[in-house]
Amino acid sequence: SVVNVFAFTHAFMGDFKWDTFLIDPIMFIMWSFVAISILLWGRGVFCGWLCPFGALQELINEAARALKIKQYELPWAVHERLWAVKYIILLALFAISLDSIATAEKFAEVEPFKTAITLHFMREWSFVLYAVILLVINIFTRKVYCRYICPLGAALAIPTQLRLFDWLKRRKECGTPCQLCAVECEVQAIHPDGRIDPNECHHCLDCQVTYYNDNRCPPLVAKKKRRERTKAAPDAGKPQIIPAVELDAST
Image (cartoon, rainbow, N blue to C red; front, side, top):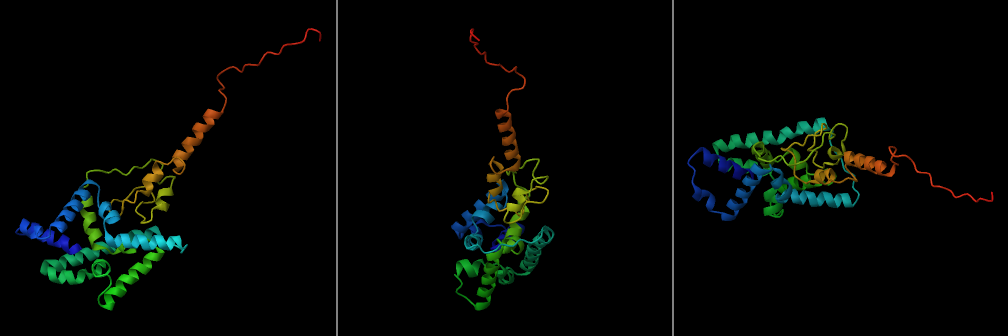
């Protein structure tokens, strides 16, 4: 929960004590791993591979796709502006936490983790309805909550700017003219100009699979075809040898 991030932040701002964090060793180990992975690669490791609500959304959306349910994507201009919503929610919750962590925890119910994952939807109907609405929307477009609402994702995106490795490969053709990866990115983390936004990337690695596939990546496909044409074409630089024909002396 984003409340854990606020607790860490307040601890570092005030009287930091290791005892506070070692009360729950499993939680401490998990958050230590998340912190290290963010500094190495960015938020995508947690958001794409560890978040349980994110995994639930993935499963539901994959099932919807298997059932051929039509998928929708927002226009890029709208999608890009909606990114700001999760940061506004994060700032509002952080401001509340400065007065009271307990109050911030109540408002942090904007996160459906507790309802869907911890309590398995066994709580008041209003919380259940909220979580179900998010999951129903997710049937038609992938990870709406993660992309536009999640304050925890917003909090993890901030230190992503300090990551040590920018390891996702791109080509000079990415964006201009090639738009394949941008079109295929299911969380729309690739800008029309080909740049991958580390604050939004969930490290699904689909673009990297395409990057190395010479049957899918358009620049590689073009290069492969040129190579095959060169190999198949006769070498114009060499003189053509005409086979000798033996003539019958009687003719």
